[in-house]
Length: 476
Figure 1: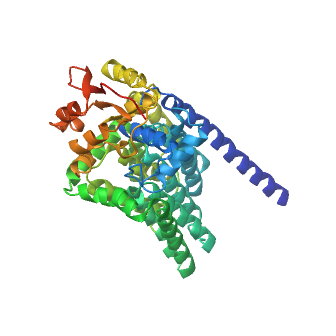
Figure 2: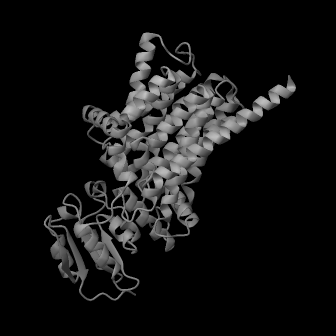
Figure 3: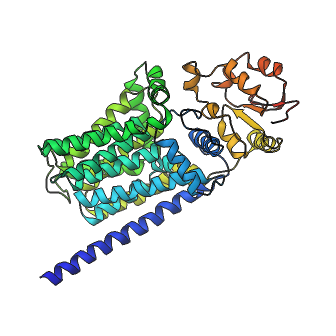
């Protein structure tokens, strides 16, 4: 009996390793095109690429480099940039690592609540769905935060009926890492809290809570607590005014329909399987406090509340409900052959909507000309733009306070035509690229301010997007 048990365990470990190995290979293969892409793939990709370049020059997060994310995110970007040998695309190493952790954690969670087949299906769906590709191909805080959150939930599912003080600290660390990257994913607290409270032991509860809070607050210290509060929290609170749950709900549903049809398929099939009483696993929906169903539903409910009430709500934020939906669906899935057939039939639709990440194009037209002219600036020259990715891809550096030129900074008054013109007047700044009518293009007096600072229009397209070059620029 002992020998049989030993062989079984070795087989189980070997199967897990094999599953994780090929899932990792698929995950990386799907994201290599985005990793090597010559242009920035999203606005955030450009912002954090420019942030990485600024940190290479010794600029510090929050103290110098503006950051609207948690205090752990830019240090992770810096570490990934270093790991990638500070090549142009090196900051995207963080996205690859986040994808591997996200998929691996989903698999581990699946093994804790269903069989091996269900775990593989869940991990594969999270790997290939377009929403996941959009946050773990380009640089994005959502990808790293979701990876940490899914890992915390996976550990909660594995330890749900036997939480020790040490395990509680690991759970707290997972929660702390999640909110330290992106506070919007705070709903991960709910399933972890349920597991801790269900144990009815004060020491694990205190250990978990203290670890989460302590880890998060400790990360404030290097960058200045006031700076972290103002940029990571107060900045978002200033624009979170008008709640639009109806509009948010429509955006969530349209995003799922466009990017996550595979996820919708498994959810619909789960509902049908439950309604018809043909569930493969488990035999019944559990309702106890630490059951997988309760924990996953708590995670999903918290995420839904955030998505419906936040303002503004961006499409990448929908990603936070994807792992929970997939895990719940595969736990109550119909026969595997039915599920696989449905997924195969809908795969072409999924590929079409994921194509920008699977086969990204390069710069064209006016953008290509601007990048070429920025690259030709004198050695040591800096450039600024309301699309910072152009500066990053041209191999130039952006002043640290302008790496994020989002419209929210304009709405809060953090960026004005006067502050942009003042930055442009710096002797090291030789170019200003205005690419959006709702960002710097909305500053009616900016052209006059730039002219007064010695700039002339070097390129303009049919959309009135302009590149201004300083006529006499000699970087110090």
